[in-house]
Image (cartoon, rainbow, N blue to C red; front, side):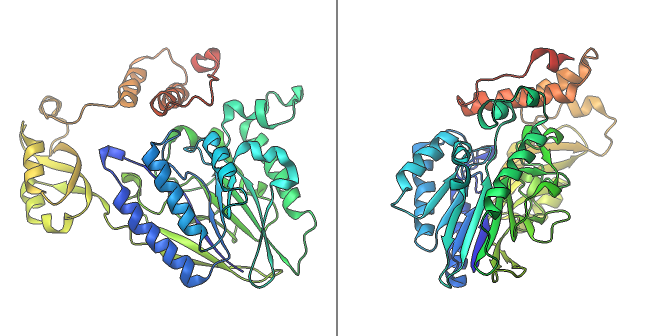
Length: 406
């Protein structure tokens, strides 16, 4: 058996108004080449196929074309992540069913019970069994995907997801044949102890969403998505976060992007090997005086950058000067930094990008001493703003006001 684990593609991402299509094309070509060279029996994508709940028609077509190309190499299992629309996944599932070897895993499919376990035969006669838990929103979880049990109405999100993990694990291990089967448990979840890059959607990497790794069912490999930094799952030798194949934002500037290739036989520990990816345009932070930045500008060519300029005095045309110096760099942000940070008056005169709505709301919370749990209020605000900006019509529930202001 040979399989390839990738995740968090975020097709259509345009952070800082930079179109990342060319970066995606570069890295997808590498993933396809790896899948061909390794003669994999399965490709698994553990969620966040797209960056937005309602991607444009062009983005949808591009994502579908990438999946279709990869399906010519090996069957694909794709989980619905927190950035994905479960309704779109249902449509994709109907389109691909019986026509293409692409298996879409979204919340509603779990209602099928054991039938939701995907079984992929290998060229050597083994069976790869995949039991998967897609991302499920906390607001709608109990209402839609857990039996109507009044005693569980106040259960924590992590406990409910743990119950679902147990159910899927039971289905995955039902009828297990040690001489034939290789079991993969896949999920788009936050695990307690995972190293967060900082570019993930913050409201969904809060501790309220953290699941304990000991709840992972018995399996031969645990394939996880949601966290953008590739890493081994804490305490689980056979579990990995594949991370995003390109840096999504500046929290990932030091990450080495990769995918995992799994190989082995039923009844034995699988080999898990890294395959490094060349992301093309790197995301970098540039720091120094204008003179220092100009002197080193060649090393920043063909990168996407934030620029932090050391200043001695206010400079009204700072951004235009930086752009003139870094003509071969995509500059996303320019900020002036003074050698003496206590000079508040001077700092206030530096022109920079307008604060985001999230930043302005955070400033407001910091000024209001009557709010007991400002961090929780900020998370709810981020969640609601994300729904508005993403036109998320799937979940119309809202946090209880009493809980927010408690």
